[in-house]
Length: 220
Image (cartoon, rainbow, N blue to C red; front, side, top):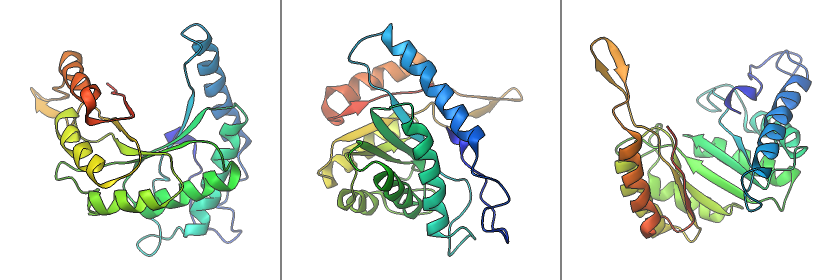
């Protein structure tokens, strides 16, 4: 759903020069409807997660988007997704914990009882891209109304395995991890992701062995 959120820019009409977007709702509903039909053929225990990512613009005081405007935009997306009946809301790839908080508040405004998985994105040094220490961020998430905390994207499985170990040590929540293939390298004029499915599979086993008590997914 990354590209399904409104592009927020401050405008005089206070609506960012775009209407409440029916096209956003329609696209999200079509995507979830497709996934719901697919789960029928997989298993009755399959759960559908509706994923929401960051706005893509900085919030105040660094940027121009206010906290209230961010919360309103997230609320619009949550409302659209709820029409398809997801089992869990996944808030993922957030580097700014203040923005993640607005997404959490928006989700709780709209549907107080739906489980929320809240994921931050980290750099190889373990901090978020804007420099927030991981342990501090996870303690804040512990205070907020989320059901699962964790990390996703940006780094490969090796550094994420180290980081989720730290997360598990500071949170009282279940922990989820979704590492990707790490950073690409330039090889013969092309950017190549060096991580292979087999490499990811070995780390999946390590996550599943107990480092992440809730759920570990990996993406290519």
